[in-house]
Every structure is written in structure tokens, then in C-alpha cells.
Image (cartoon, rainbow over all chains, first blue to last red; front, side):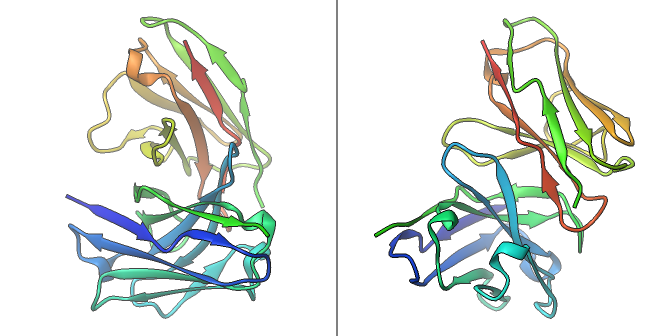
Amino acid sequence: EVQLLESGGGLVQPGGSLRLSCTASGFTFSDYAMSWVRQAPGKGLEWVSAIIGSGGTTFYTDSVKGRFTISRDNSKNTLYLQMKSLRAEDTAVYYCARQRERIVAYFDYWGQGTLVTVSS
Amino acid sequence: EIVLTQSPATLSLSPGERATLSCRASQSVSSYLAWYQQKPGQAPRLLIFDASDRATGIPARFSGSGSGTDLTLTISSLEPEDFAVYYCQQRRTWPPTFGQGTKLEI
């Protein structure tokens, strides 16, 4: 059974940093590209960042470029999102999601999400 | 980027009725469109990909149709557990984008 479990969310002040983790099980992690997708309270879904299976190529939405860094450790079956210079508009539930396709993709499995709140 | 507009914003129906949800794209997505279901407090679940292919374990009452700029999700006979928010998502061009959602309520 495919499982994705996020952790690391919490309350952080504007300008602060946070690192999210997503531990995967039930599939060969290194075979799949992975993404982070966020959902602001009461709002829709927004793709944030993606990384291919080897970790060699990464992608970001414009609003987080230069502030967020996606990475993965295939030996630990874990995906990360390092977030810096956080803003109020980054407040959201962050989901990790497995991609069906390598580059522009659908998302066939999702974690339960971790809430990031940016507030003073 | 491709903008996806879903309609209606809210759809009020009863169990047993047929639901038709629309997703209109600002430019052609061909058939590169997926539909997701999200219930309160839960993660989204993939229902349909490539416009009309059901994901693993999805009941046959869910079907997708259309291509280009006008795509549709149909639920043939609503079950109580189908009342949720539905999102469309395109992978025709970078970046992947989602519609704003349709809330299906009783």
C-alpha cells in the first residue's frame, strides 16, 4: 500500500524558515517524481514544486523561486521542502504527492498534509 | 499558464441524481486533464486522468469526457459519499494548474 506521511509543519513568524518532510512507503521511491502541492485555508489547490526521481532536476512555481528548495534522499525514502523568507501568503496545508508522469504530471497518491501557518 | 475555470461553483443535488461538472480551459489541454475529489479534512483523491480514464478503484459511476477546452466530469447516480469538492487539473503545459473547484452538496 502506498503511503506518504508529511511532518514539520507549524507556526512560524514572517521571514522565518521551516523544513517539511514526507516519508514514503509501499513503492520504489526513486522510480517516481514527487511534488509538493499546497492549499490555503478555504481555498483551492496550488502546485508548488517538483523533483524527478534521481533528484537531479527540480521545478518551482514562480512565487516560491529563490525561497523554497525541494530535495530528496532516496536512501531514506524521504522528500523535503526547505522554506525560507516565509510570508503570510505561504500559509497553507502542504501535501506531498506522487507524480504519475516524470515532468508535468497528474498526482496519484497524496499524503494527509501538514499545516504551515505564517503569522506574528 | 493555462487557467481552468470550473462551473458551477456549487451544485446542489440529491442522492440518486446525475451530476455534471464542467471544466473550461483558457487554451487547449487536449486530453491532458484529471479530476480529483476532496472531502473535508482529507487529501485530494485522483478520480479520472487523461480526460476519461478512471484511476484504480474508482467506481464506474464516475466518468470523464471532452477534450480541448471543454471537459466534463459526470457522476451517473449520486451516492451519499460523493458529496465533496471536485477539482480539475491539467498537465498539457508547464506549470500544472488546478481549477478553483466545484462543491457538490446535498
